[in-house]
Image (cartoon, rainbow, N blue to C red; front, side, top):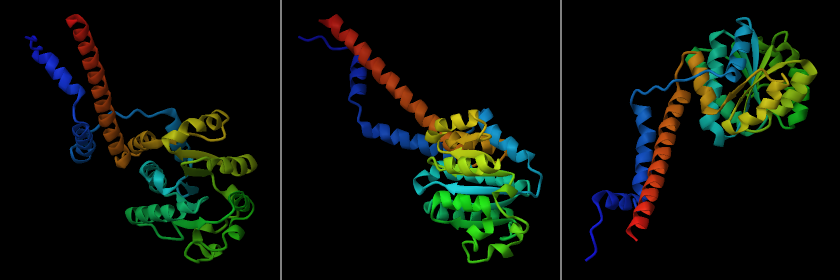
Length: 284
């Protein structure tokens, strides 16, 4: 008669054939709980994020800042928190925001984000911010902004002549902006670096998806950008800097819990397999 296996061994065997649907359910619970229950992880500020924050801090209150929404809807989960956090910082300093988009998808995204902060800060269009929208011809559009902003964008998205907007009084080109923030999910920032920084010396900050962040370091090392705010991690850092917790911090909490859970079940699965292998060899 075959000897009955120990209860612990039987338990380990069951873990190796555990129905994966339960794992998916546990992952879903781990994703939902941090958004409902008060949960806060430590957030350390990196020098890359500070490079953008400190540069904006140096801009005198009431000055202009140029903002560009160069990301697609697929990157909203990462880029929206970045854009909102940096815009909140700018608007708290009473900076006047002029915004555009290098890609057509960024046009709707930018307008939506600006409308949200307009309500939050009770902004007045044309005085506190302006939305120029999208123009075809990436390089040509930026060169036009470098040479003559009002000729390149004779009207804003809503049909208002840019020459009549109070925010653009005495503004001729990108040279009149002390700083440019590019929120992007691809290499669109390269165009701004080539034409705005190299030709005019306009300082640029990168706010990008996490997968793009590593590609920004050569520009940072070359001093062509002042800093990198990368992915949800960067958004959570910026939210901490401005003391305004939002989706960046919540998203990082969710990621941390799910990643910890996945690492735990990988360790347990491998441990169970290793113990069962040893037990099987011993029983032979």
